[in-house]
Length: 430
Image 1 (tube, helix red, strand yellow):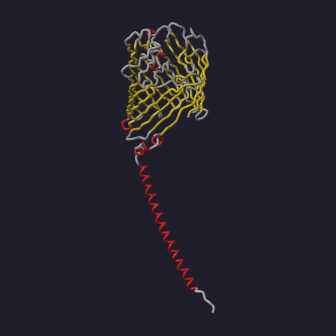
Image 2: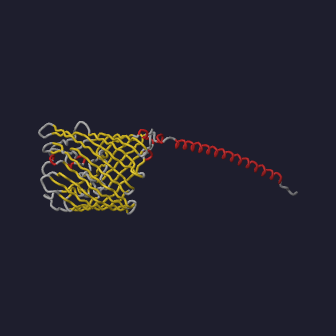
């Protein structure tokens, strides 16, 4: 008897197995879809939270500085330049790397010199934090290498600026705290010479201070500015090698102030005229015992006039006493023989000409004239400079400049000094 396979049973078994497998596959797919939908909902929730976070005010993003790295809350900008100066003087200029005054021909007749230095190389860092509650805070740190070094190729760092500035935008006022330029006489001679006219008619330097500034809008394109502050009294004047006191230990700081007016001069250019002054007191301990007090003061005016896109005129004038720490009086503040303050006056003017985007010329002159009756014998009694320079921009960063200047320094009771100076500068800005 021939056996017959149960084909019907076999077919039925495969059919049942197929439906069962399909059912299991559909169940898996439904579970997988459910999980995907849940993940998608989680992603949408997280994305919504991120959008809300980005829409929040800037101050809430840095509300907890302990949880934020420095670079996330403060913007930083590195700037500065590398500079090489090479200069020739046909008479002995003090100090050589830059020219302050000329030594008397009585002591150094026609003593020419050559100098080369990279000390004016400058590095700076601008800081800016997010505006919080209408307060904008910024800061600056800047150095060069004109500190007193052991040798010409071993310069030391010199701190130029280190300050913070908090500005209340709605009230147009600000508070500055730290070291920066004086409030008085804010302009400077546009020279390649590092000293920018100091001891030659341009007074003012840098010192620690607290400064208040108020900007006052007057009319479209017209505004006024009021600045006032207290600053560290600095003299570095000692009556002898063993004198521990330099005269800067008076019980109150030096006061400075300036009022200025900004006005249109044509096109989008803004001119400025300002008046400023300072007053302070120095307390000098005498070798024989007791104290001697010296007052330091100045009254100044500054003007800057951009007359055209290619032409800017500017200048300053001053009168004051005991101005050595402000780079006035040709370095004299007090006559240590009579213990009287030395009165001086002076100023400078300059024109900047930009005939081409890559080319700039500057021409100017300045003088500093202490009162001769206040000076000891053989002291510097008059110091002047006249200069012209030009700079060419080879690239956006690299420029070369050449400056020719004539300096004349007169002395009380001895021969004057005259110097023709030629200075070549290579500058790479970043």
